[in-house]
Length: 444
Image 1 (cartoon, helix red, strand yellow):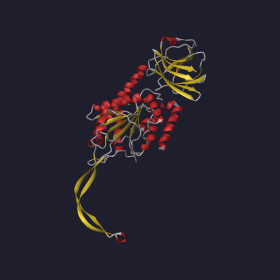
Image 2 (cartoon, one colour):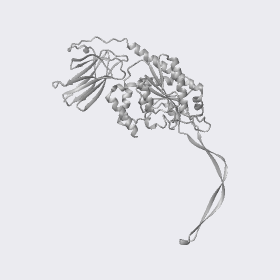
Image 3 (tube, one colour):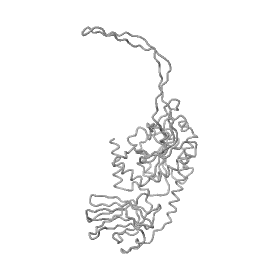
């Protein structure tokens, strides 16, 4: 628990010091990270049921990952493909995330094999003789005496064994919480999944019921969640085209650490149930491993084509000309979208502006009470700082964000952080060619 709290605090502190930790500076898919779950002393799930292959998850994930790396390199020769491991070595989830982040990955694909807690069965395999005792007590007080007389009985001999699960299929898991596909619910029948189980379980989750967990989830969702869902949906659709059961997209109350610590869209693919007779054989076969690798690679290729097309289309946008005249009021041609009203306790306050989500070339001008205070500036992961003073003669002081363009990924999005003394307020601002984002300040 101490390690878990320490990791959360370090991550959150880094987020507030430098928003760039979650910034993705390149829109086109240039680098893909492929992670083979578990490894080395971390065996992962085990096919330890009667009639099973006695296989371990760490070996299956490595075999599939190597085939996926080869398939991605074949289908996407211009993309850098980085595996987290290529041999049976141990890495804790923190190391895996560091490999992904240091290589500036644009996608993170985590390969796992699913499992459920196995039930125990027993069968009669014969009988054996067992000695028991008749106990007789005679006398009272100090003369009380206990006599044991042995006798022999014939009793059944049982053999105990683990029963293979009926659960099968491929599921996709995402960062964050509170949602599981109906298809997976239907087949699970209340059995507990062993998601990301292993010796590093202390690193594998963040509890979203905590304030830190909720903050972390929101930051990740704003940056990468839509893209992760898009990719996960494409993988699920490709699996559904095969004879395998596609169990849909899933999230859970407690998150998966290896997804939460990667600064990019990320999905975890539970390729099949190692505790199921048919799935285990499929996952251990060259045919099954290659089919899964090809499904995932096709989905990634489609995803890349979509993202690259959006980037190429949006790149033709040119910033609209703007005037440096402080009295310029061109923004009056657009509607005002009032996003938030903030009550000030002090006359002076600070506004920091960042690009929200992907760093995609958003350019803005800013007007305060009708006067230009910022002209034609590009938003990045580094703050643009404005020190402003509330006009005591005005009921409301208006700060207006004018979109000079919509970046590579429309619309124009900005994160505004308002600091007044020790009070900090975040406002997410969306603006485009039809409307301006407006925040109103009132000094009481």
